[in-house]
Image (cartoon, rainbow, N blue to C red):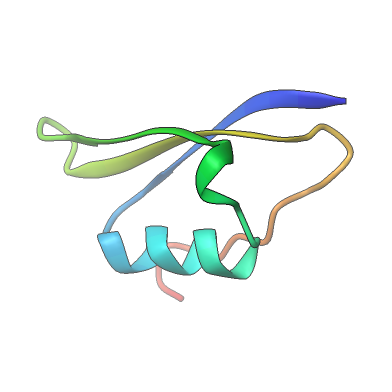
Length: 60
C-alpha cells in the first residue's frame, strides 16, 4: 500500500543521500521544504508502507 511519508534532514547533502540511497523517484516526491526556524530540510513523498527507508544518524 502506498502511503505519504516524511523525514527531516540537517543539510541538503544528507537529504540528497537519502533520496539516492532509497531510490525515491521524482514523481513520488510531493514537496521539499526548508524550515528556517529549525534549519532543517523536510521531504514529503509517497512510499510503500512495508518498506523501511535507509537512514543515517545525525553524525554519519
